[in-house]
Image: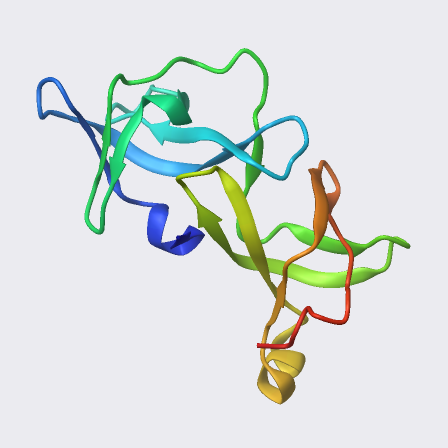
Length: 153
């Protein structure tokens, strides 16, 4: 398993040539918003837009780089992403906090847990919360279900 902050910023290397294809810019989610379906790659050029690399074209993600089969393609529509700073909402619509990190199982594509900050005071007083039960990443935030086994740290 990898944390989101360990992935973003990794150099992407093409498997066939060994050349750098860009930088890992983020994680793309499937329609349900609960599983990873690929990576978002930023190109090396100034004018290049983010490209989508499907998870099946990711050969290996290591500590210092990720090896991919191809540069990917331009997404047809804006991909659903998982990014630090997204709002996390309870099922009743109340704000829980902001997404600060996520624990991702890249072998299965599942998102194991979300790390949520309730603000600097709550972080100082009780630490950040890891939420294991969430529904989907929506346009206005991630909807999470706080259950008894979601502990504070």
